[in-house]
Length: 299
Image (cartoon, rainbow, N blue to C red):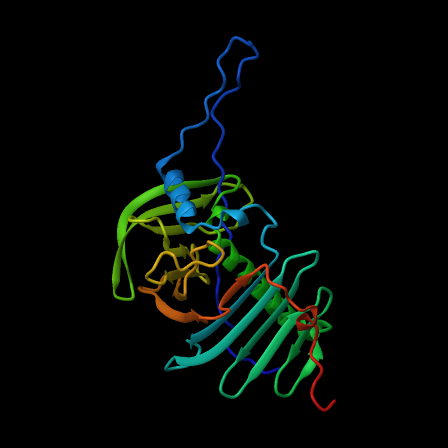
């Protein structure tokens, strides 16, 4: 099977929920009503970012039925020396229920590759092959599609920052920093997120929220051991805050940087710009046929 660099949008799921107050309330009915816990500064900053981002009709679980993203990308491949930069057109379609359906399509100057999952079977098509990915020989290919599905889910969750809230996660305020995005400097509040679940394998996540309005400027998932990479995502928005989709402020460009554990500095791995028309869509009418393996012309 033709192997080309696959789009790396490694956005991580994060969740947060305010912990209940300490102790157990007495059963004496004369006791005053319990007082809700006071929100920490970190929680207030997260709530402010959610408020600014908008999209309150889509905060409840299951409110978003499907997601489409279309991007023009530059991808850097550091497996070659000097590193190779490729231009790729990427489209992804993900339906969440009643069963997961997925299609990923990307084009270069010489290749047109389509991968998909129809709810039961994985499939692949390029300029030479057109087949279902069955058996042990294609185990790795199926895993790559599953990874891409997960990446697309993560992308959706960062588009709706209410997903930052969940269970057994702790947020703390770190030292303020200024982040440069394009030609603009953004003074940012910095928040550290740690998952306190005993069996959690999620890395520490750092969030940079613009001090003037609370928008998400940058996010980093930190590597903790050899073989891992710290992944950082920088978000760029249109100048006018009213440029929203269904009331949601969404970026028009994302840059991804990687820093192998122990490396002295990071390096860019991807720059993705969403298309002006149809770059990000959700809850649209998706034709079920797009999730089926295409028939090859002439077969």
